Amino acid sequence: MGQPEQHAEGAGPFTTRLTWQRAEGETVVWESRLARRRGVLSVRGPGDAAGRPSTAGPRALRRLRRLNAIASGAFVTGGALFAAGAAISQFGSGDPLLSASVYFAGGLFFNTGGYVSLLQVLNAPRHAPGGGALVTAGWRWWGYEPMRLDWLSTFVLFVGTLVFGVNLLDSFLRGLSIQQVNRLVWTPDMIGCVLFLVSGHLAFAEICHRSLPCLRSRSLGWWVVAVNQLGSLLFMVSALAAFTRPSTGSLLNTGIANWGTLTGAVCFSVGGVLQLFERP
Image (tube, rainbow, N blue to C red; front, side):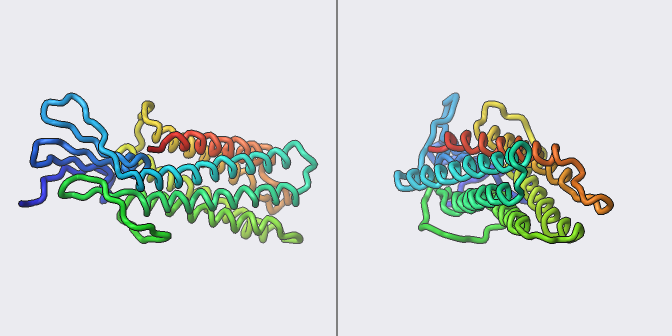
């Protein structure tokens, strides 16, 4: 008996939604984000107006809940610490060592959230093309799957958090020239912001099943991505304002740099809270 005919949707070479019919006439729909976040497929019987969820096994669902809770908590905490670091810089004593220490602690939580997001992709249940069931493989700490849009999005996010870590470590250095500050602190900050924005764009493509963003106000996953992408945009604004002028040795705009970081960090915390509810 041959494989059922499949209808694939997605962005470019990436498949984010598959639709096929079982022999008994049921229509099965697999969506990348729903399967890896909630562990469900949609199954619609002949003549049914709406599909019913078909869930993965209990072991897979426990795994998904656990990973989601860790990632969500990491982003909430990391965002809160980044907001605190920006508040210290804007309203506090102005001690650069204190704000750098708070930022660095927040960066560690962002690193954790980025890596666990990658683990969510690697260890999510996969669909079996023949019968449409969700199958859970053994645990993996790492994997290379560049033709999966969800893997690419979370991998770029994780790399972005690591680049931010370089920026945060270099911010502890003292006695740097203006050129060194812009090269060692500002440049990694800009690269990290670009990677966050790219990751968010790929996440939109996964949800929208196309290259251009869409509006899906009834989708919790869409709101998670949208709020995080807003945070990435605000981080980019902050990074641009944090460039040190070679002629004066001062930032382009200290207030915008601090407020951009603070509001962007709040967005990531809010996104983390929303993500907590995007679970099985």
